[in-house]
Length: 180
Image 1 (cartoon, rainbow, N blue to C red):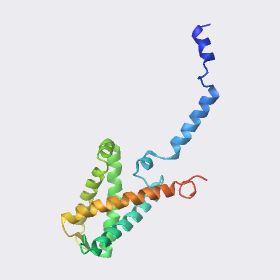
Image 2: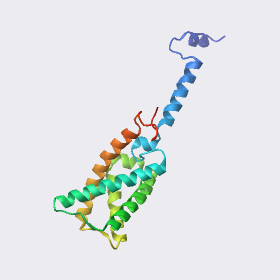
Image 3: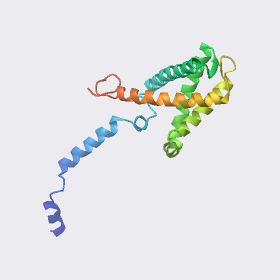
Image 4: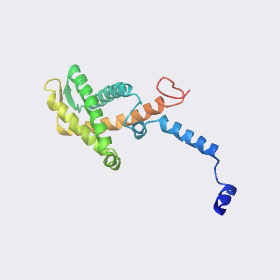
């Protein structure tokens, strides 16, 4: 018999096999509770279809609020029609989600280090492309309006997304993936 084996059996800090299995099961449950993308703030819901519906809804709401605020202070950001607005928001939601997936996959470190500035820059480029693609019904008045709109839009959407995530993943909501 090895003297080291005897010493390990007497160690009061050593966990039993049953305790180790319990800890392992608890870690597995925690790992499954939220995905990485939900934790990092990109996804609003684990189910991608629900995430897209929530993203579209939030984008429509926040864009309408920011455009309304601009009109309210006599500094409109954009000339648009209702159809142009809806088409622009749908395109933004689809393209931005695809771009963010690629950015999380290939530039996650840069996104974290930029503290969201990289996301806003990508959003400005997407808005500019949408403005150029939609010949009728949606045009930013000038580039400054686009940049100001993108920053205000991103700030409002961040706040709403944080509160929405807290509400969805609270323990009260079983339908959206919360605990009973």
